[in-house]
Amino acid sequence: EAQVTQNPRYLITVTGKKLTVTCSQNMNHEYMSWYRQDPGLGLRQIYYSMNVEVTDKGDVPEGYKVSRKEKRNFPLILESPSPNQTSLYFCASNRAGYIQYFGAGTRLSVL
Amino acid sequence: KQEVTQIPAALSVPEGENLVLNCSFTDSAIYNLQWFRQDPGKGLTSLLLIQSSQREQTSGRLNASLDKSSGRSTLYIAASQPGDSATYLCAVPQTGANNLFFGTGTRLTVIP
Picture: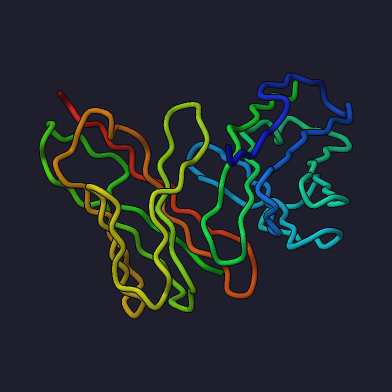
């Protein structure tokens, strides 16, 4: 079954404690992306990757890092989380020009 | 920068009605447009993707149209059902990149 898998689904942490949200896809897609969703602001792209070792900033990259060492994985790293990064995060993957498949989301709270 | 607007923000209809959701975008230089569905607390499910060369795309009771020159797309839902209740989002990519710009969505409630 075609899937984008994010872990964890829920995470509560404290300011400054580094965390990683993992994302994995089983469709051999070249493209992968991270989004955050906030009430009233909608979905905004954080980073995307067009292939292994190729990443680029989206609309709201500040405070986030990503890496793409393998085609199937695209982790999102928060080196020093702050309360304004409390949000619902989605990972997505796609072939160029085709529909994006989304993960189920990770709800992050930074206290 | 691309801006995507969806009107109305919320819509409530009785079961069986046909309805239209609207999406407008400011930069017409797009190569496709996608409509998604999001259920509360869940991820997004792609419903339809219209390439820039197409004028419409159909899937079951859903029909999406695209008018690039006027910067508009509509999603038509026929014979609505309570299971159609969800938030519907449209999104357009930035030309030459994989950066999707999303509208803030229309929250649809279909009343039995």
